[in-house]
Image 1 (cartoon, helix red, strand yellow):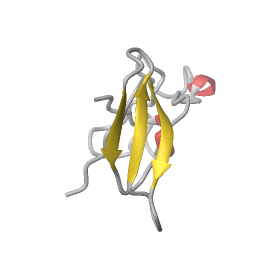
Image 2 (cartoon, one colour; image 1 turned 180 degrees about the horizontal axis):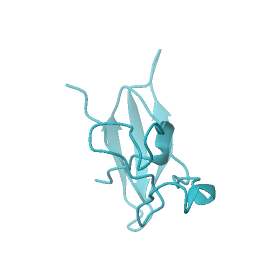
Image 3 (cartoon, rainbow, N blue to C red; image 1 turned 30 degrees about the vertical axis):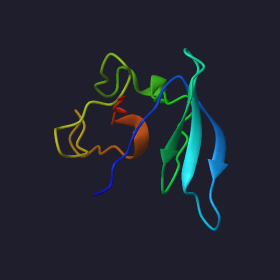
Image 4 (spheres, rainbow, N blue to C red; image 1 turned 45 degrees about the vertical axis):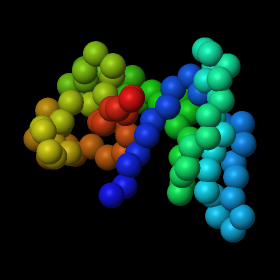
Length: 94
């Protein structure tokens, strides 16, 4: 089973591994505490904010400016207009 964790207010202080990434040392920016986390991969999301300002008034946007789609699809509020990439899904913060 693959588990994806999203951390906020944390920094990676060290990436550890012999031939591949095995663990990270992460530091909490609020408490200054560090912890070790066994991992098999790492993805950085920096400044995740949808660049949809130019679509206001053309497509339905939610309060966070993500494009509103029909649940389980990429269909937008306009017939025949589909959406791609990060402008329609929200990151789930754990």
